[in-house]
Image (cartoon, rainbow, N blue to C red; front, top):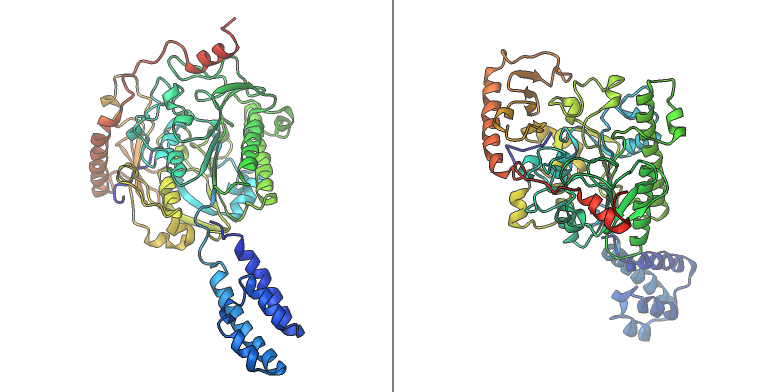
Length: 542
């Protein structure tokens, strides 16, 4: 699903800690009788007690030792209060430029976590993150991979980025769009992507041309996948020991793909943490997308409890959970936890796991129902807002970019302002109870994937349009989500005025996106660019 709003549009510097130590020593000196002129001038030379420098000489010339000591105690303590007031960081004002880490697994649904009620899977680390985060409980993405990535990166519906599919060049993010990485890079961020890009494999569309400094990715929509045209991965790749494109050159890795992507991300963060610039790490996993491949020990954790395909699927997710634990441990160990905004979401609704548990929702990936678009959305930033709270406001992937820009206090230029359709979630992150005054909105979902040249016939196929209370599906089904979140009872005959309003809004939206479907008639290259690049580096096909 893509989301479209019809109704709306640094840490403190090192001197601060020095002042705190000085104040503590100051107070100790006052209590222990250590007040003497030598101490006073030592403190003054270190920037403490500077408010006394204008009066000390005359006072020293006329005061007796006892009176001078009393005067110093009183005056210096007053000065301390002033210095502490000036230099102490304001607890109400979070640092302006947090580090940002976005983690997004593939094909993992809302119901695939134990914190959301799944009775089989074990995800203790993500459960812990859930407890520490602001959780958007009605957060929506697109119904498939590339569309979600396009909307997340740009703050607008994927169709307006030319993305209507996951293959056949229809996954390419228009070159006219400004990406999240580009926007953050302009604010001084170091930017890295690890895992899955899936927004174009031709050189001009690659992430190194779209704002990312560090690139460690596979090609196409999945490791080892290849389709006619430009969308495809390096030849012969599997989830174990894959060839990964690292800053323009393939590296033949050793290990399991999810482990590799997290390891590379953590290593890159380690290399950037000593610098003065904040970092943006985009960890875009290909797991738990098919083919269902995971280390044997993870498969065995679920073997016999569920069918084998589900055992592999859940094993892939538990492996993600373990890697999340290693990431979080490093952030804490390096002192980065407090001022790192961590956002965890998934790229579409459930797949293999929906047969066993789907959190009461209808549908899954590539459908127009809630099960295709409602996903986990956990936001943790200890320095910025309190965690452990739910927010039921209707939110979406298109809201992430404008939220980050508001956190950074960015004055958005006209072109980017015109591009972004989402809303900033910052008011809700600071106060989740503000959802009661959150204006209603309309979000559009369309699965796309129509046959080439069949756009008109696809207008009402695999689509839905929803606001806070109702969803119109395929132009013939209406569900009252407030009373029927599982979309089981079609009430289209009971609410003609709602249907009329939603149809009018959808017709307007459909008309507006037509000129922006720029990839519909594109002819791709004869050979996948990743294969061409791989063969050039290692030799041609055998």
